[in-house]
Image (cartoon, rainbow, N blue to C red; front, side, top):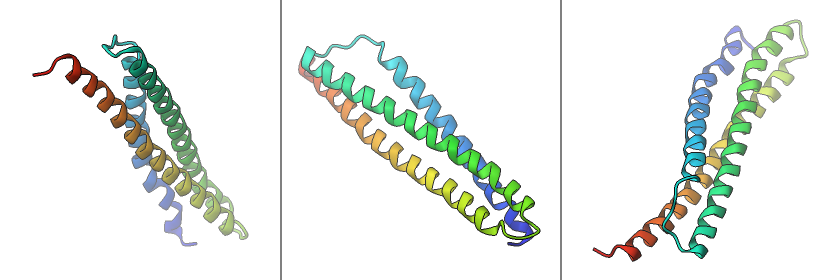
Length: 134
């Protein structure tokens, strides 16, 4: 590993930080939207609540994976510095790879959460159109 490999994990941290920020905002918006009164019939309200609960769980999982990824990216340079005398290169690569895998898994979870949110929004929109045909 060259001297520049110390900085490689640090280049991922701003992007991970922005993902944490936007996911946290999305999670707060979801929590606030659960308290809004809806005009859904009881069956649709139940389905919508289940979708919102599922979205909340997915956002929580995504945040956990992003925090883990940020932690691994922060630890990787320290491992690389400590292992300059030999033997730590493999550990550095494993920690860095684990950070990337956590970030990719978080992105997949966020894509799935977006699909569930769109389904919930479609359910609310169809209910509004049924009540107020224009």
